[in-house]
Length: 426
Ligand SMILES: *Cc1c(COP(=O)(O)O)cnc(C)c1O
Image (cartoon, rainbow, N blue to C red; front, top):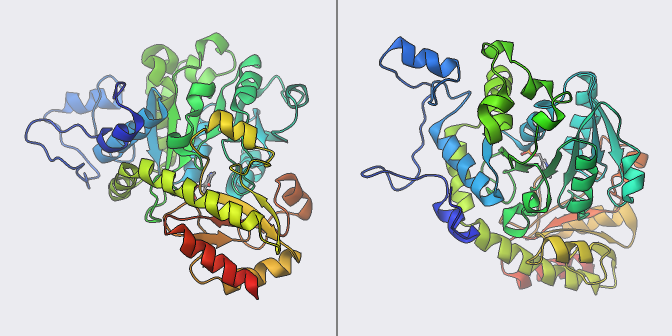
């Protein structure tokens, strides 16, 4: 759908398509259940033989309209919402992995995902090998095993702002017969569409830029429909052999490009839950309508802030791919020519203690456990999001003890810079 619209138009018009006389604005279907006239109609839904709604834990029209918009924005074949970004990344992997399997993952990822893959999935019998995403192809290739089922990475890593070489990762995954899953939370489809560079599955914490106003926690999974499960049938038995919990249907045969998302909905949502409330999906949709405008302003403001910080004597280093001397500048130019995101990392001279003192002096920039919304905010990962990690794990994740994560909002850039100036001046 929306194949002919440009991305800005899809932000506004994608998803909800009212028929004659229906509400212009996406309605909130705040209903757990849906009514049918006879028992057989309902039965066919349970057998996945007919399409329709029966229980909001599996599907809801408000949620589906928003999932359809995000799917169109990413250029995917099918998509679904989840109640959080964590749930999205968990389902994206667990949909094709089970006990005894293995995944390869970039080591520069969000702390929550690092815990999920490194600790919680391990308890479920799924092992994860973390690799340095900047290593050459041959080096990363050594991490693959016969039981590897997926490769995972973030387009722009949170919080270390490493830009992923998506084509290198896609080749690594495909040469080993597995899909590439990319968490595109920070770039958003406005600045990068990983599927166009070979990613098979894209995930989001919609909590961040997509919502954009820090109103609703949420997640999304979009499948490109490009990965040929049947060509690797022996690896992905959940998709390529009969599902006894649905009378023996084979997802990859029955649902084609929709197989992966249908399985995630029919099995994982059915059994594990994690559906967003329709109200939250509605709020997310309001955010999506201005995503293209906000991302542009986030990037413009962040560029100015990064240039200011880079020129300040008390600032030890700035990591923002928009700066020409940044090691990821070339990758950013290739994959995100219109800008990366509003988030940057920097360190101030004096290390961990100086970082904390500086943060406490800020007035406009608020200390919050959040990132990537309209309001400028700041966080010190070593004391906050990443505090469970050892110094060694921090170093591997590219998070130095002095690293400050600064999320530039869409206020006037000069006010943001004035605030930084006064906090640095003491
Ligand atoms: C925040 C975040 C997540 C987790 O999302 P929640 O919505 O907080 O569960 C996953 N990946 C990235 C890159 C994030 O920034």
